[in-house]
Amino acid sequence: MSLRLRLIGLVAVVLVLSLFVGAAIAGFNASGSVGTEMRSALQVGRRAAETVAEAISAGADPQRTLARFVAAFDGNRHLRASLAGEPGVAVAPAAETSPFGEPPGWFARLIGVPGMTGRVAVAIPGRPDAAIVLETDPHNETLDVWNGFADTVIVLALFSGLTIALIYLFTGRALRPLYRLAAALEQIGQGDYGIRVGGRLTPELARLHDSFNRMAGRLAAADADNRRLTEQLLTVQERERGEIARDLHDEVGPYLFAINLDAAAVARLLHERRSEAALEHLRLIVESVDHAQRELRSAVRRLRPAGLAEFGLPAAIGDLIQFWRRRHPEIEFRVAVAPDCAALGELVDTTVYRIVQESVSNALRHGAPTRIVVRIGREAEDCVAVEVADDGTGMADAADPGFGLRGMAERVRALGGRLHLDKPRGSGLKVTARLPCRAQAGDVAT
Image (cartoon, rainbow, N blue to C red; front, side, top):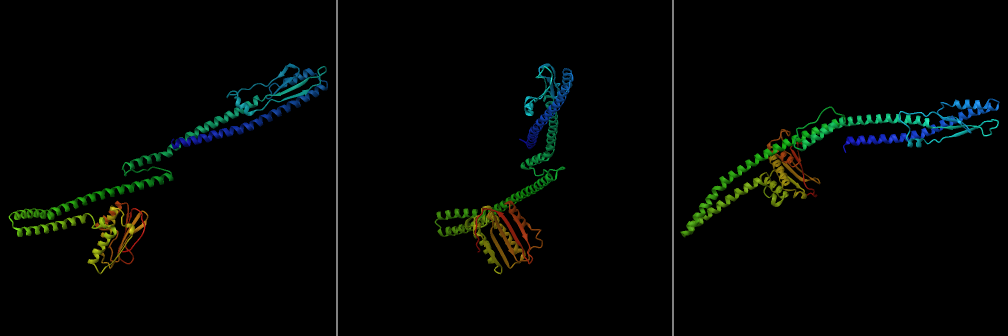
């Protein structure tokens, strides 16, 4: 069920309950009011009958006086007057009508006022049982209450109908921006990040739409970055493949051709029983194989850091730092790698290695440092932090990184991480990267 129908249903239930409660209260009050009216009418009639009885006792014409008294009740709404023992002398209230019809039985039972009777004895010679009989008739009074109740129900029905119609129109207008937002979310789900929502809105919905537009803008920017990164990766990949193909063709290919010639020569010389000459060709084959292996190892290192898959991230980082220690013995290298960072996954391991490799290389090329500190450890259960800091001259403008730092940032973003460059107050540059990964614990320094 839609929110609009739920709201209308809730309002309708409240109105119906209010109507029932109001009817119960009105019925209770009306019952008391009708009873009071009947008692008052009977009391007034008794006083009038007592006055007539006193006049008859004083010698007035009894029959004429009684007939005149009974006739005086013609038009009374609440009392029926008659003479005891003379059924032909009686006056009953005229039954009124209502534009809403007669009150239903349940309404009459709700009012529930029984008829009341009063007798006033009259002293008439020869008629000891002569009396004026007064009876209440609550029909007309109940009819008045019924008319008022029907008027109230009609007013409440009109009010309820108008209220429900206004709620229907208002909720439809209020929910229209949410419908547009839902449609926009569907377009976002289909990959259309250029969609935006707007229009005049309430402050609450305006904040929701502003947040959606900012989200759509960020998604569009992220999508553009992903596309650009994918294009760059494909370009780099194809370029790397081309270079490897050229290296294999130019470097390994000739040696394989030479091996083939030397092997044919060895076979021919052995057939001719010229062992010394065959041994020389075998030596050349060994040299060619050794050279081809070196070229293949070089190509493999360009695709995958040496030792990373075989010995893990700490050993690969240690080999990298040892490589630079031998070439720059004057620089102090400090490395701290958490033991729970030994197996972060192939992609994360490679990214961490490339971050350290690029950061250390940049520091040595551009910073002239005396100390380089590398720290790799857990920052949270699902996050690894990589920090490379040096005390060199740093960058002229940390906000304008070169191609290497941009490539490093793209690697980090591709994994859903963050990269930050910071120039301390003293000197140097600190590169900090945070990457999502599996959670472990521990820390060790090497």
